[in-house]
Image (cartoon, rainbow, N blue to C red):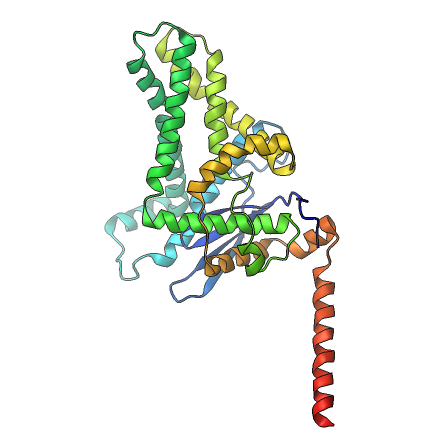
Length: 341
């Protein structure tokens, strides 16, 4: 068995969807969903990203922005896929649905997913960038010290983020998604700690992970608070525009920090990952065994964890399984020989 504290970066990532899990390994991804009849449906596909060039995907800071956009697009696509299993089977196609199909010629789902993604980004910018800025202006009209004003804006931004996370966690459906989110993290932690990917070992793994999207968003918020300290512009409209234009830069920085934190398991990265773990106490919950089974199915559809652990930890699970099978066979033969005698 691998060393107790050893952790090896696997490169896989995922997302919780409705009654299921999406797991992505390089350009290949799977969506495993627990259907209403109890069966697990696993769909495997490829997503190369909005930009096909591999060059830009390797450029530091730029790759973070691209990865963020790709996560939104793929996340929306897989979320829609999982939702299809729970749509009302008796729901009739409306005239509006028919009109959309006619206009977009079979690409309705992609167009709507793109539209929802754009609206989501606009909503996020309005909620976490514009709203804190306007609230700060209302509350600090008599404050002349710009440093204090920026600090207050940062505190408001963090409070809005935490309040948003807490409020959506109160929804019943979101609570189940958060449990699947926990199952996703547990699977990745189990693999990266050199443990066999079984329900028992996954159940006993941590539900907190450094490369979580929740931690990424928190890094974005914290980095924005720091970066906005250096914006010294008197014009309020221009100051807001600069804040919005800096969002891709902030996302790029946050991605690089998150990427390094996921690769290195040392005191420094453990400390800077701690705030993200605290928020993950809200956005991840303990899954049941059926949820873990779904997560395992999603992983095994796109990732050979046995091969990974053989290379990373020197553990040959296939050899162990063959050895166990031979031992079982010898035991059965021994029992049969005793019975015959």
